[in-house]
Image 1 (cartoon, one colour):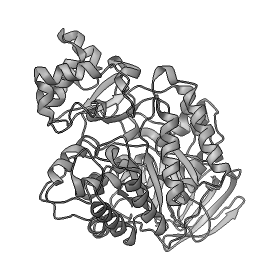
Image 2 (image 1 turned 45 degrees about the vertical axis):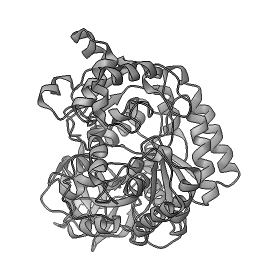
Image 3 (image 1 turned 180 degrees about the vertical axis):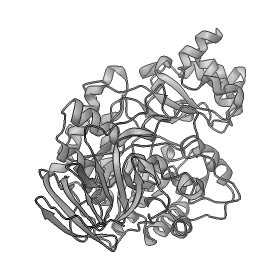
Length: 536
């Protein structure tokens, strides 16, 4: 057991300049922080020899809901990156709450992003999910958001409509269940079904409930391409009306013609809102490609009232071909804006289709001598919609601009759908951020970067004792050589653990060494404390 770390270059998470010093640990907490060198040679003292000591990294946007509950390897990928706290339930996509009537559809819809959930799992409510997590031995700390999409699918399934007044109250009660039991906030995924059909009144009602409990709203907005600016205005308006703080998820601009332009217009909208007192922030991942479910590329009209089997019919293929290259009001058509050559198949279930993983739709269809839209339609139908994709839709310059914003924080937006070829952000987001944006490109100072990975995200989700090296805070700590920390995962070989973190402590206990998880599980479920939300 380590009682003290000495002679470290401490980057404490506050954004202040690094300093030489050490920490004393007692009962899983930081008991004392001291400055200057030390010659203490006791057996329970670790001499850092000038390595960087930071708080454990806090990832407020991962899709590990099912993995944390069922996967015995959960924590290995995270601890290799220095992640000691992670928040699930993002983008409205969650397995809980659910209803007996609609859970099969719900689990099938979220599978490409969250993984497979057994239909006989005896959990229906967010409160029950949190209780189940609390009973587990977790390798890292886990926080939970209530997913608005899960609430909606529990009430109306995947019908293309908003709530009745009675149904709206049912959805609000589902939000209340989670918030009263310690959920950190509410997440929207307005681009996904069934949320894209909800009314503003429906959205405001759910958001207001989260705010009354001291939570915030995290939102995957309706559109990130041609409709980016209007989508940012939409969610700001919803949260302003509901009097609830807002964090815009994976803030970016997609579509080649929008690069280096639309993101600045959207930033102006955010900063105008902030200037008039609206509590709005954002987060971003350090890559120029995103990942999602293939269903997000299908225009809503195509599958309205139909199953994915329709996409394998001549009528369904013709229907998709007719719309896939058109601008569609109120919906971002990603294929129209970036083309099939920038859509890469990430994961499928059927063995015969696994050869497509890591290849673009255009590349595959060219090799098959088939129209790319027809190939995509038939693949999605054959896989019952459970296809993960990576989309190269962003400008590096835009990504850099967002990460530099004083109110942005770093996330991974990691998907746990069991893809053969996942997005490398699952394995490497946080080390990549340090390597690329601090060490190589000098976009941010080390202290600014660490703040965006520790104290700022912890504060954003209402965690009051994480993210700082300060007496009284949890002893979740990373120790590393800045020049050695790196991501190994890339778009060619994405399943590679990160390297370079000498030691990671969770609640003062050794959880990982040399970027590899150790025996023991010292994490816990982190529930919301109190009803006050501190905005920054």
